[in-house]
Image (cartoon, rainbow, N blue to C red; front, top):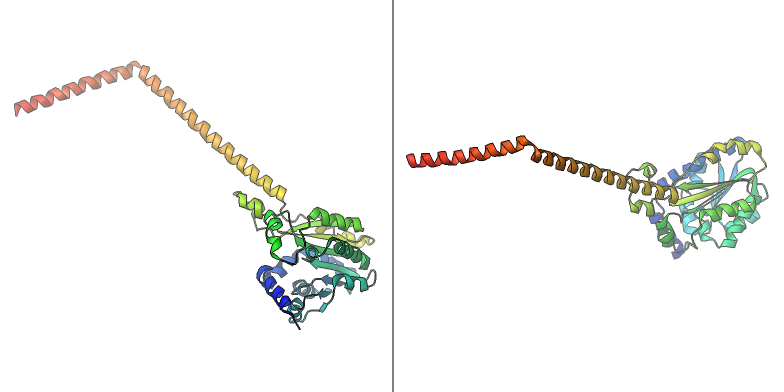
Length: 310
């Protein structure tokens, strides 16, 4: 039976996680890492820890990759099973510990790391390395505290979160555990923000990629490692440093433009002043002034004469 708290968490995910279609489209970023595995392992078995509603399971099923989902939340499992996905109840660590060594090509965990105490997360990484075949992949995605709004506000919207995990820490943990290749992917930043020429301060606060993942590959299979090199070498996402630098450059460029406009205005004012002085000092200007004075006196005398005449 699904408990009230589990129903709550499923409803919470439906509101704040995003639609199934949105999440599934975002997860496609991992396909260049995953799809090459199929040519080296026909079964291509994997385990998804904390599978939730099953968007990743569905994407893997669409691409003929045999991934089993595991979750402790019955409400989430119900959502996955409603779509006929392979999802079972179980604790992530216990499930990993029960698997045979070098039996999986993929271990994934999307937004599970931030729910785990530090030592449990270390154990999950160590067990993942053990159960992966040579060349197999570990994928761990989590909120990115490098995004200031995420790190200080939205992360704590989920009451089951432990604490934010800086990407430097998670990537080091994976590397320290013994994985051969480690890649940080920054994810889900607003489209076009990296090339936006009109950044605001709010963009700096909330525009950095709100999620990141660590993709790690187990060594020992040079052909598989070589097949995924393009995915590991690609650039992903938007960092706080790059966004802040772009904002600073735009502010500097605007300040330089304002200074140039001020200098141009000052130069024009100087030119006008010089022209006025030159005109004042010229003999022609004095003669014109005298003629205008004489003409004005003549006009007044003429008007008086006409008045008397009539």
